[in-house]
Image 1 (tube, rainbow, N blue to C red):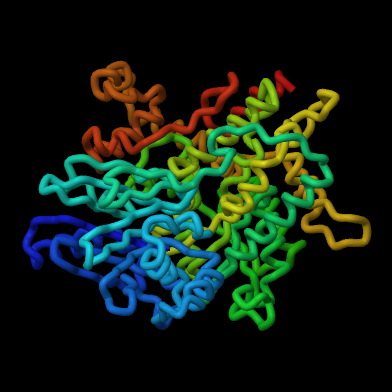
Image 2: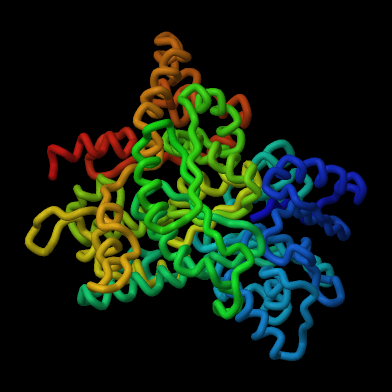
Length: 555
């Protein structure tokens, strides 16, 4: 991951535009502290703040084609780059200047124009500029793992940036760039290139359970291994829950070998490190310790206090660019964890985001009225991830220059998992008897007798804890107590006058909104924010603990 900024079609003088772009790019330098690069042409400028993960020696950006007429700035990773590199080399028309996983994008554009994007397997946001035609192309990965915003300047220029903070002062209109789309100077509109059946809530047909289990296990293992592509020290985020533990288990099985060459040689960094954060005696800390001991990782346990979390709220909101309650609750511990990870010299971590959306893991899914509605809710949740878990995971970690990779959102794994008959995902069996959420994922990683288990049974079948709960139950309570003390009853009674649009419904929400407005005032900033709210009559508090209490009367 990195930070990118592009201004295209500007009428500003070249040196003035360059100074402006460099100043705004500095606002997102936390995303790429290792190096920065600039490409400038008439009326256009691309900048790149680099976090060096792959090809440390020659992978600096913006990347250029052979005659330096096409420039590319990318935030993200292309996991099938070796396959693409071989394909474009075989044509005999191209040479590669670097070993960067992103360079194939340049040659794909030269050969295929705007139609190549769905060939990319990875997490990315990029802007490409062609000096010959004075045209540009921008695109974002299918789910929105990587953030990007688009804005329109008063002089007619189109702006792109990894974070809103680089656009808000110069664009009269801006918004989050929609995932799975591209935008070009030819179309001047968003075009959806990512079109799987599940995206339109197509209901999969029946499959036998045995077939589903193999499909889920094999495709997920491939997704994890592909994301181990790395030339720097890396690790795994380990909360002790099912999702992060499965990621860690698979990574541990492959860590000794270098995945880029089909595991034929020793890995550069064979010791796998795992990281967990929480308030002392938090449920996650104990569970993560158990998993780390089982897997044999080098485990690191970090602590924070409620007061430290409160002290960091303004910084967290500044980096997240949201005032959504559940996102802020969960992001603060992750923000602390990323800082400690970076201090140890680790630059990339594997994480478990996305599983709850794919498999219906949130506790309110126990109340799903039917398999069809269960599937449709999964589809809706996945399509909203760019506003919630993806935003949290990316911006919390990139605040400190740490890249989080999310194998559950690999597009090939999604194709497999979202093609599973939803009756296999339901929180009840064919006879209507309740069963654990994410049953089919858990069952997929049970092994035959005599084989080494991926995880201990107690972990494989541990009930869901939302991250903000698992880091310590006093965390959410402490936030509520503090924010209620900061907002008077009189202020809260006048909330509709103070915030007539998207009026906060709790003092906690009011407090976050007030901090956000002080940093990002105005309707355009506010309109980039979405809210995570449970479905199907569960408690409106997004805490997993609140859902658990509620569900005790419904199961």
